[in-house]
Length: 296
Image 1 (spheres, rainbow, N blue to C red):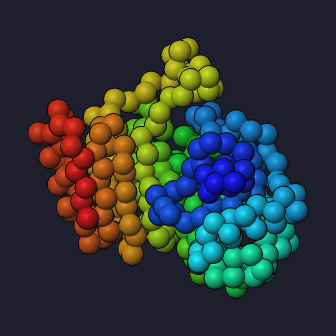
Image 2 (image 1 turned 90 degrees about the vertical axis):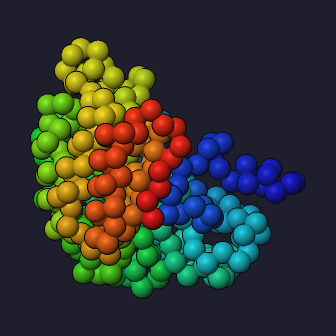
Image 3 (image 1 turned 45 degrees about the vertical axis):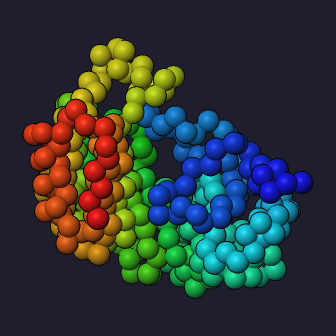
């Protein structure tokens, strides 16, 4: 088999989704679907939630190890792979000794309730075995918006879970969906999300503009007049409020969906003012351009 055929053989779908900070990191599919599968905006959780059998995971890791023999980091693929029990995760980590011996750190997607279900002892054990990063969709720090979108968590639960990760030493990247509250909650969304994140220590913040996907419950709400989506310009104004109120440190910030065209990226707090200037310039002068602006 060719390399392309080998890669295709170990993934269920043609396209795999990894966070930008995991670009180039080999991905081992360990689960499909989302254990929650109820967020009104989500178009990604199309598969029923299932954890692959260990023998299948081992078989695919063997192939991945042949394709990426020098890999030092491994991304466990699944919409919230951290829902897998600690015992099974430890067995997966241990498999790398045989098939990917240079791997010493692991990362994956997680929900807040995945973290809350694990004890401190479990988190410490997983961290000791190499768990270095969790990618978590917090989406908003506003409880009315989280409830509206049926996220299944509250802002206080988010802070509690992330503070536990801070104490144990597991890094995390959080995703925020700009525009998630629509016009009704636009100021509340930005201010309360910033307030929540200021109580935590994310390594990365990844902002994405809300997209109303076809055939989702959110699309039905829009058609019934129950949700009023914001324009790209309104979302950028909301992002400015978010950034103005963010006071995190040692954190990378990126939004590649600005006005559906631009990317804004920088370190917080060092480049906060540069990013705010870029936003102000876009709002004032640059709405018609198509060349991305990247702030580094």
